[in-house]
Image 1 (cartoon, rainbow, N blue to C red):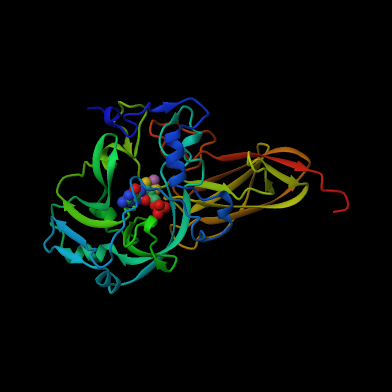
Image 2: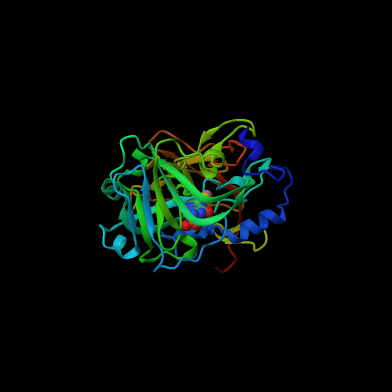
Length: 370
Ligand SMILES: Nc1nc2c(c(=O)[nH]1)N[C@H]1C(S)=C(S)[C@@H](COP(=O)(O)O)O[C@H]1N2
Ligand SMILES: [Mo]
């Protein structure tokens, strides 16, 4: 069966060429909120501003009854409660997360799913215990190829009833920075961010970081669950087998300068020097260069180091804004040699659209006497 026949958009018309979003998209957009672009001012995204993506319902889990099971192709099965996890080695990492669908609504035609504009990002200080040592204790069988991470949430997508589940290769799961996280910014996880425990896979798009984690199963054949084998692929069309989505593509975003118009979000700015600031990140980072473009003329921005290997980096430059309408843009390059494309690269599920952000700013003469 082709992926598209029961693909993520099965049961819907898969694509829309209309500028109007549908009621289904509105429902998804309001429950799975974006960070406002001005959230980019803060090095760690303030509480409640971090984006959210919840496929089904937020489960209400009882911390007393909750257990994490580690089972399957292992020498020693484990069953851990929260206190046992909290007594294990503790590690905090500042990590930028981004949804693989960020930028989807800018594609034309538009894949019908969560209609992100550009706000599906957030940076938090995540605390938990490293996964690798726990897997070592469970003693993976030599023929284990993957770990399957299953959440406590359940629903139907693409006509398939499922628990939300994703897998990682043994090597990816044992990477030094993969955490079982129980705190976000120094507090127990909020229900919507995966309470009481989530996987955190720094550098990967958000789908890998399974929330409401209930089970880790070592398996001897690659996992073929819906979120692994059907969703999260770069596909040309419904029939294309595609390639799996994994690490975050390089991206930069500017804090919108000046002030917004309420309805259109069009930016208005007084003429004169203005400090343009933004943040850039990549799952194959660090980011090594950011250019800022004004009316198509690009100049290098000053780029700061990151707070952690998978956290975003601030960039800035001064622009002397002259009256008129100007096109402002930014573009990042990473250590792997990847660069943001100037135009979106369309794919069927609307994944990984990291095309440069470009927007108009209307610059006005400062009010006289100012
Ligand atoms: N169990 C479970 N884990 C999940 C999801 C989900 O719906 N269920 N959504 C995933 C996706 S697609 C993303 S982008 C991130 C979002 O994490 P956040 O809501 O904490 O920002 O969680 C991931 N983990
Ligand atoms: Mo996502």
